[in-house]
Image 1 (tube, rainbow, N blue to C red):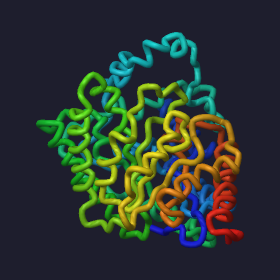
Image 2 (image 1 turned 30 degrees about the vertical axis):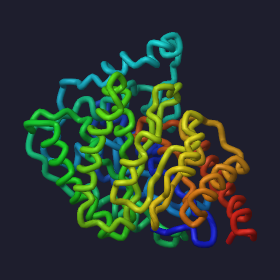
Image 3 (image 1 turned 45 degrees about the vertical axis):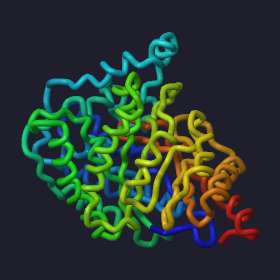
Image 4 (image 1 turned 30 degrees about the horizontal axis):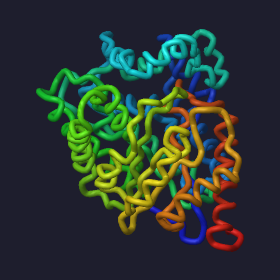
Length: 406
């Protein structure tokens, strides 16, 4: 991974709002209509090229392909793992959510709040006919056989990103992947125990991880489920019970990272992407010790969400290990408010003064569209936020280095 040697570098968490052409094809799939595979491949190739070009134009230093080749940040593996199969039986993830204290305390809000994730979908021709759920990407999938990784889709994504990077000036490129503990959400109907399933996932994901690093890209591992399980399953239990559960998931992730140099890995956790109260979120202080055990050089953490922005102060007490890098979120992803660059700069400086300016890369809290049908902001706002990120990093760099940034 690059470090901020002479100025604060910028990046984001990975997922970007898909193009109208890609959205249209997925809508047709959801409606059961025929899709031309050549048309899809061309939509991906041209979409990634434009996405990379736009990131370079905005001035983001460490970029990716927007995850355009994935249906969803978790469910993309249903197309890459033998053993994962579509099913008519639905896994009801909302069943546990309906018992959350926040859903009871703010029941009127939850009943009245009608922010459908498809509100910000690009204006694809068939959009008015689509009424699918983002959850359907992984609620109608189950593991019903031994897992075996298939690399074809990944190799296509690697090829598209390589081609798109030609002639674009950036510092580095990365590719996001899911952590074993987050893909564990997909229902297991084959393995004898949750742990056997978890470590089978780690074994097969290691193949994907290695292919990305061997292709010359930085690997980003996404693990948003790790934090949310505390609310779902452990809120009435001692913190030690949750930490014991999380420790096994970190062990499985480190197993999946075997053979991969730490300086080619960045690890991302967050507290969910929804524009909700977040009053039951886990305190980062209860998790940071486990996070720092992940075999990665970089740690991507939410830091501009108003429920978590104050947590930059924990670095007064927690020492960032030598050689490690923080990628704090200094712009949000869950509202269409565009941060002022001065606020972005202030957030960056808070971290730089505690862990060292060279150990900070300015990022976003999370991705802007975790799947093709889950945009969190309008596409125009996404780019405006990234522009604010770049400008804020420039301002912070001038203050931190005492001269104009390159």
